[in-house]
Length: 178
Image (tube, rainbow, N blue to C red; front, side):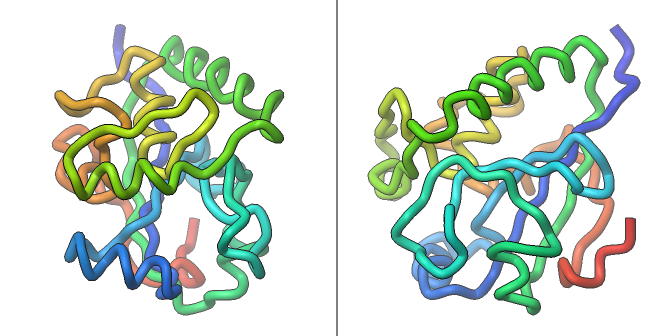
């Protein structure tokens, strides 16, 4: 099969207290990962804040670069990567994604999983993910394996290190021109 479509991986740094704590440990410039099926990032998904004003209530979210959490943090920096995929792989990813969408209320943010990364020990629960774990899970369940590790050990910085991803933008998210 020939890669004839793309998905987009957005890595961000909002500068919140939580992201600063993660960055202190990881030393990585970006600490949140999202996936989109269009270059405009009009339909983007991840695990994060369900309510921009409440960092403690996390889970599966549809993100929007104009509203929600990103609108509260206009100085958010980002990097956007393009991943060439086949039409069949996109179909598989969308099928997996729709499972998350249909059951979105039952999913929780996997805070223990974030701690597990620091310990290099995967912490997995059936209905609980953190952002990069979710994106890696979508890819892996669709037959795309970018790393030789479990999704529960994938960090946002792992996306930056992948040879299969092509950089298309780096800078302020608010200045991204599609």
